[in-house]
Length: 72
Image 1: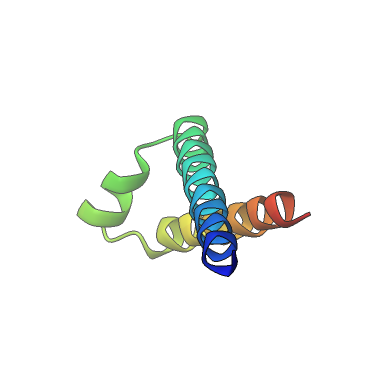
Image 2: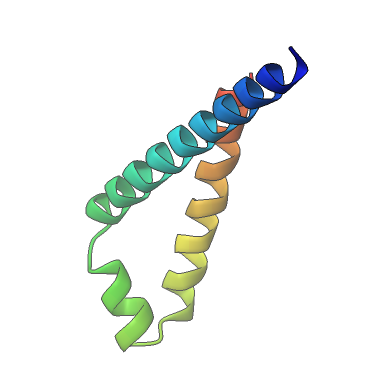
């Protein structure tokens, strides 16, 4: 009865989370490919703060879009 409902809700939540993470990673890699230059090389080797902020902004933006799409 109640336990099964909770399990189904939990599994659905896991599925949506997994789907969201998959879409996020795919989108982020796509953005990385579309932007000129090597994103991680700029951030890690050259300590490029501007590129890091851009990557963070893209990550937050994608997360909001994906969350809205899954929740809506």
